[in-house]
Image (cartoon, rainbow, N blue to C red):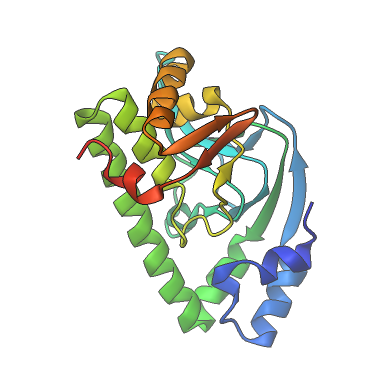
Length: 224
């Protein structure tokens, strides 16, 4: 597990902060461990912090009053989320749940607001973050409505290789077939079939406890 110093220094948004700004961020950011199935944040609760996934995996989802669930995305190590919610006075609009034991970093709302007021570099980072997030969700909507399960799995995996949103992702993804199914919106059984088809096409290799991506660009273009 990474320590707080390593978390801050390894975050791309912190690289261009001044020494004073990094010192305050280190002093006010906290780390906490959450167990599998635990809420990292919950719909309807006040938004008190910006959240980073240091280790583990977090699912961003929502459940309707009728019990229908939808998964928006997954946040792997190195990803931060909640910036849009912090820019508004509203409570959380979604749930974030740890799919496995995870280490979570929390940057308080007041510190986030201070960085907005004092760092041009941080503002530039957030513009890029929000733009990349918008592009990701537009792509997910297109994938969900237009593509078959194989293409949905391919595009879902390719989205994790976004160097701005998820700088810590490596070619070997420690994602179970069930987790990949969650993110793609398809059943575990169908996800297994799709992964085997992608493996036969030479795009990835299915392994115990995860998959190794062999060709990110072909995954991005799959089904086009």
